[in-house]
Amino acid sequence: MLKKYLLGILLSLTIFILNGCSNSQPTTNTNFYQGEYQKGRISYFSRYGYNAPETRIKNNTPYLDDTSHIRSGKFVGRGENDFLRFYKDLNVQGYGSISDYWRWTYTIDSSAYSKSINKTLKSSGSSYIYTLENRRWVKKSIPNNPIGRLRDIVILERGNSGVVTYLLIKGSNGEYLVKGEYTIRKVLGLSKYNTGIDTDIKFAKYGENYKIKKVNASLLPSGFFAIERRGDHFTFYGGGFGHGAGMSQFGACDLTKNYGKDYEDVLGFYYKNVKLKNMYSLPNASKFIRVGLTTNNMLSTNHQNVGINILAKSELKNSWFNIKLDKNDKVKILPHSGKLEIYVNGTKRATTQEKVTLRSANNKFMITTIRRGHTSTPTYRGSLEVRVSPQNPSCVNLINEVFIEDYLLQVVPSEMPRSFGIEALKVQAVAARTYALNDYLKKKYRNQGYHVLDSTLSQVYNNTNENPETREAVKKTYGQVMLYNDQPIDAIYYSTSSGMGASANTVW
Image 1: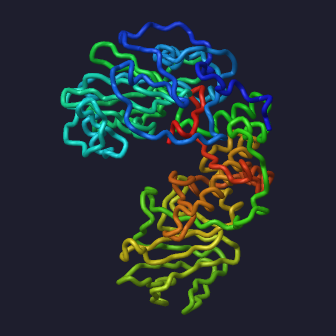
Image 2: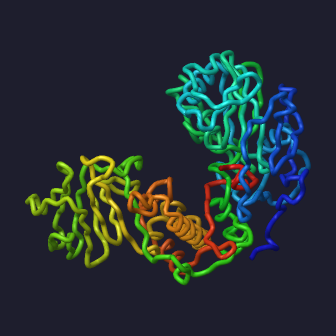
């Protein structure tokens, strides 16, 4: 599927596909070496006189490999000057360059970054951060004020796509190696709380000048960037928004609207050698999914209580009772001494240690104690399970069990705007359905009693209103999921490409 549209997959050990770059001023840092190729990565460790840490590189996921998203042109090279020119070039056109996040830049002085990195290194913990001791990288607790005064920031390894995989932070108190695109983006964050100053990130789409888009971002837009240092100031030039692996949502919009591709073409472009199949014909695949509902800030599944507006004849029951409810009834459930106290229209109706389930005649109910992006009283489809939290008996957990196609009606609009058009929304619907099935089968949250969360830890659910375009996209792709070797894939996706798609093993 879509093989004739796949553009420049990285087949050579020494070549990666980039757009021809425009001329730019050379960096003042003269230590921009050509890298050494190893297992799909470009390493500068030996060039800078460092040993690489003793880590095992995971096997790649075949359907999530490095790809070019540039419209045309090739560039041969793998040095830091090459990446710098690429990210500085505002005339690079590719799939998704219609996004404001296609190119970005910011400048910060070493004093402000010293303050910030001393805090972010410490708060990031030691799982993905190595300390240099006796010329070896070791994992240990990060002390207070770990770098002292910032001396330099050096990229020591990239994936072939350009995503930074290892970053060196050199300071007066020590040297640290940061591993992984997310941790790198976090350590280099620009929160005013950490830096003490306002820092603007300027963004640009293809062929346009930079515009200020984000101020004091605590997380860099992506791990695709290069650094230019002049005196005490560091200027970062980067591209894209998100982790960079799988489907680019702006790319899907661009390919369908401006290049005439249909949703199957786009899926085949971003996910290699996959096949579409109806998930409801697969073994071990259920039609229903259980969603853990989080609090207002989407940080916890422990709610102080839950308020429910009844929208049609309903029943609230467990093995001990069955409370009949009418339209416009108001239910309140509170935890008390490890039990649930149930109130209907202000009157206490029951106390139970057992979880309770709400089902309605019209398959909908409204929760008044949760706020979401589109409303302070979100409506959900399916049923609602309420139970005392096993982690905190003074709180309750809420689990929404819902038909997967109905689940998608509230995921797809929360993940992709309706303005992207029906065909792009079909891409999102298939990707989201496959993602949900993959999570369902992995049983990641089995001990918590649900399959997925309603936050970015899974997929964002019911943060935006349903719309006709979404309903059409979900209906026209009914049940379709992507398989590789007859197994549902991990259909990850993100906002905007930098011009290159990253292989999964260089991101995670």
